[in-house]
Image 1 (tube, rainbow, N blue to C red):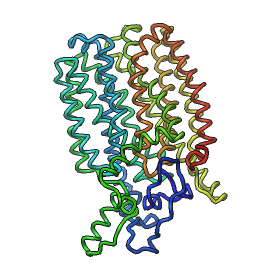
Image 2 (cartoon, helix red, strand yellow; image 1 turned 135 degrees about the vertical axis):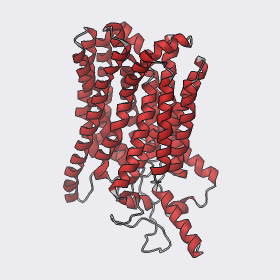
Image 3 (cartoon, rainbow, N blue to C red; image 1 turned 45 degrees about the vertical axis):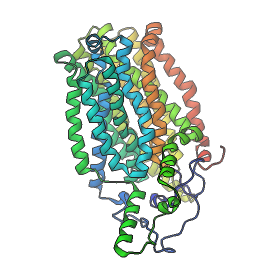
Image 4 (cartoon, one colour; image 1 turned 90 degrees about the vertical axis):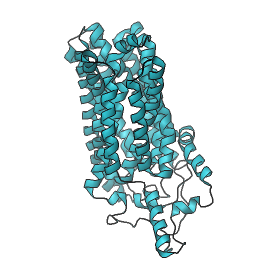
Length: 506
């Protein structure tokens, strides 16, 4: 989402402003009439008192919307990993090879690579609420089908289609949080939103382990479908539309209907008045790919986060095997070790959110003395210590597992691996939301593409990697690649990110 000519203009002004040309990053926007100059221009008034602006909603309503997203994300992410402990059982019942069983689990994540490319832009045309509701029902239907699958082909196909619907949470969350929370609240809101979904990635194998050991694996899908049905109902009753341009368009339509004066308009409508519906949709649907192909900021963020997401899913997909095959734990007990992953992710998101907000408050008065607002790039320094901790934890986890040290040492290693990468990832997400305010959903969809692709592909080579190199050298190699490639990219983003976003240095 491009910012205006002053890249630190207020969020209200950006919502009221014309959409920028995203072929370039953050180029100066054209001058548009001010509300004082044109009484027929419908905008959000400046300040914190306009209740129609989602950023000025009562705090309770903001948290309600955030909590709905969070609970929805929990279930959909839990479904992505819940199969892990039961893969051998599913493989035997449906006559699948071990690779096909891993594929059945991972293809869900592959679908989340492509879904946001369509869902994110559509939410910037039709609004967040209709897309959230429609994809929620879609996910529910196909997740139920997974539970009734009698062949491996049906299971794989249904998992892919369920993942497509589930991916809406990845496309919508960043946009919705950007719609309702101001930059100085970004860290806390991100931390609270992420806390419950991050639990889902680790709770999935825990629940799946107990279900696989005590009942049929099909209850994994039936139980999560019941939860999803509840969330569909809650979303229909509690989720409010948050997308600023759509809310302004509705106000303009109401003014035209009640007054009979057709001169009322919004800046967004004026920008699109000469375009057909097909042209608007084509522009919106191509936006994530344009961002991914032409914006160095998005390219770097996608590569870094894609690599880290791939490592996370290597850990998630192989963790149960470590405990059952090397430590000889029962399936139910192997799932309990995912608690270490959950605690690391949650601790990282909560501490990272607080540090982000504290750093933003610290930089704001300093930049005010220089006549500017805190830059988006002020989020970046937190990435360095976060990723360092994450890589050290990954190495520690690998070597303690290699020598089969006491289980608590392995869990401590994986805790810090998840903690560190989550702290760095929080800063990265906040940076994208700040840098692309007007098109956050499209920017998130662009970065999500490589994240999900990595989450799908990395677990496929993990068994071969660990078989050839062991846990110690395997994890050390992953950490080395992250340090050698990732750190220079983060440093480059810190030094050149602002110039790239302003359209200099393309």
